[in-house]
Image (cartoon, rainbow, N blue to C red):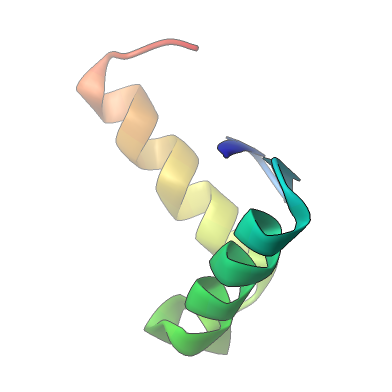
Length: 54
């Protein structure tokens, strides 16, 4: 499964069961208490700091 995260967007690509599993993990995490935009900003910020590009 692949997960693409850009500001204010999450794109999940994979088998149906993989996507359902990932969505359940995201909803169970503490990040689910916040908005998707906040979650994606945190993720993209980590990537920018690590210097890794897609």
